[in-house]
Amino acid sequence: MLGKLFATLGKEYFTLKDVGHIFHPRIQKEIQALVVKSNGLYVLPMSRFDTNFRVSEIPRPLQGYDPTSYRVNLEEKWCDYGYFQALKSPCQHAIAACSNSRRDYKNSVDPVYFLHSVCKVYEMEFPAIENLLVHPKSDILDQRLRTNQISLRFHVSNVIKVFGSLIVSCT
Image 1 (cartoon, rainbow, N blue to C red):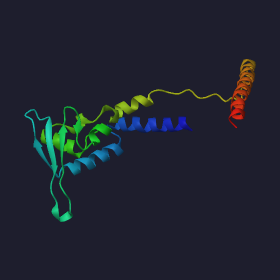
Image 2: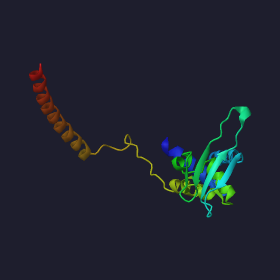
Image 3: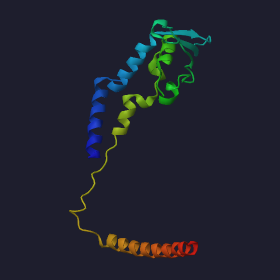
C-alpha cells in the first residue's frame, strides 16, 4: 500500500519536473496568493545595500483594519511576521521587499520546495517485501523465538517477585 503511494507520487513529481514546473502546483498557487497580497504593501528601504526593509500595510480605515509594519532582512531570510523563518519560504512582506529591491523572490525559497529536490527522494527504490506465508519458516528463527520467550518469562517472573514483595510490604 505504502509502496504503491510512493511510486504514484514519484511519477507525479517527475512528470511535473519534466513538463518544466519549478514548484508543485499547490505550492505555486500559495506563492502566487502571497504575491497578490504583497501588492498592497508599502516598502521602505532601511539600508543602502537593499537587505533591510520596513514593510507596512496600507491603512484601510473603512474596513476597520489597523496597519502594522514588519522588519524584513533578505540576507538573513528573516521577517517579524514569522512565516519566513518558520516555513523557509518568503511571506508577503519578504516578497514585497524582493520586488522593491528588484530581486527574484524564488531565490529566497528554501531548496526543499523545488521539484528537483523533491524528486531526489523518489529516485530511491524500495525492494518488495517477501511473503512469509509462501516461504517455509526457518528453524533458526524458531529457535531464537523460543529462547527469547523463555528469557522473557524468566525476567517477567523476577519482576513480579520484586514488585509483588514491594506491594505486600507497602500495604
